Image 1 (spheres, helix red, strand yellow):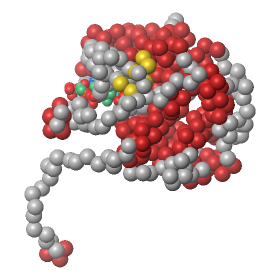
Image 2 (cartoon, rainbow, N blue to C red):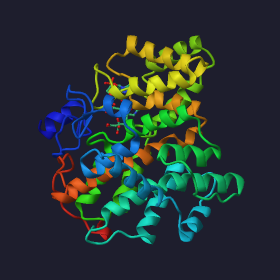
Image 3 (cartoon, rainbow, N blue to C red):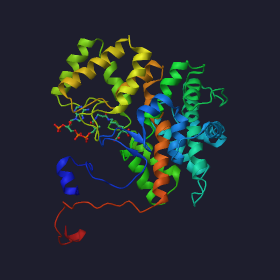
Image 4 (cartoon, rainbow, N blue to C red):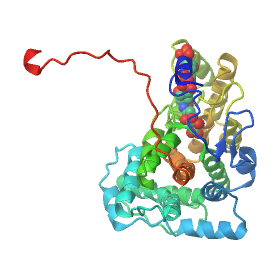
Length: 375
Ligand code: SDX
């Protein structure tokens, strides 16, 4: 589809094929697949580190490879003293996404990737190991003045994050729900943050700059920030009846319902929704939060079937039921999507061409310059 046809459609490069990739298919009618594996199989039968390995090396690990990979990630959980100094200087009021972006940019300064990218795989594992530590270390320091350590018996990123955030052994079903969420959020083709990462990588910039740029894109409520905004929507209602009335009013006012709609998924819906909804129901199915969520979902199904719930809608209540502060929902998205971003950075590097599209000029015709003294 040409740019002008796409522009007529909705702008935002909708419908434009902006490059080739072997990593993920979504919205093409054959479901959501990472390197050919269906999301349902991955979410129901694997743990997140298997998917992180798949995205990093384009194949699923065997048991020995997974064990070694997990141990490498565990070994990368520590924060350096310099990084702790930087994090301690970031105020409590800071948006956690800016905290995460600062930490990744700081890693680019303190633990730079080699200019020939020969240690890119080590840096990917560093990011997988350190990101949960960054959020938890800052959280406990700015809120309680406490500097946590990074020791843990938890072998998974999911379990380690929950343990360090809440300073207690996480419940098994919380770990399983978090594993599922991390798998669902890991990769999604040329979404805005991934395309940002690829564009940055295409200039031959370093991995930390590309990931920091991607975090900036993910922060927006039209993208990753939607899970936090969806929680705000759900919590704003104190009954199912009030939710139905409120959502109807928002639709009449042409307001956006956060957690619904998708550039790629239409009537067929986002396959990730059903998978995370199972965990939200398991963790809090009898609560008002879940009942309000389901009432909103059913109303949207009836009134706006072309705006299905996306991965963010039930992620919100699932995280809420695990006791995670709403402001940390999108940072969790980073801990997962960093594996997808880095898969695309590696793929871009392997067959690089600077990403530089053209624009359709709609500005003034050529005109005569008038010097400042004559204006
Ligand atoms: C993610 O791309 C990815 O893959 C992203 C992601 C990933 O894994 O990386 O899946 C993660 O970002 C999911 C999306 C999270 N965002 C939200 O939930 C925010 C709410 N959703 C909308 O902002 C919107 O649906 C988008 C941004 C997600 C998609 O928008 P598009 O494709 O640009 O479509 P559009 O904004 O042009 O909307 C078309 C029409 C408009 O109405 P009209 O002007 O034609 O009358 O649908 C309406 C929109 O107003 N609409 C909505 C709506 N989404 C679109 N109306 C109410 N509520 C909504 N959520």
